[in-house]
Image 1 (cartoon, rainbow, N blue to C red):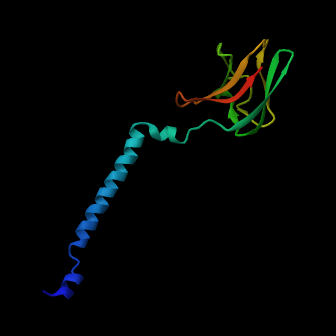
Image 2 (cartoon, rainbow, N blue to C red):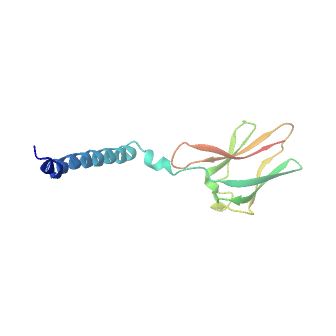
Length: 135
């Protein structure tokens, strides 16, 4: 047997590598197409804005001040007071709340109230509480 010829023979390498590459490309394409067909592609990068708010309660009126972080589109915010419902901020402020902006989120607070600023995505039903005040 000629071992030198056996070690230098490379005819079968090309088809094996070709098959492995074709399988890998097929798996990658199936994953990418499946992600977009199922609608997961839109939700991957969507997350709640990271913003810091401080609250000031004076005479039963609760004001929230955006102290920093991401700008928050005003039409994605609502306020929930002790789970009794929500009030939408659409149209009451500019298009975005940025650092330094103050808004009145509740009036007539009494007793133990919990006030939450809730962000809701416009592209899905995803929500997140971005600020919370407990009196």
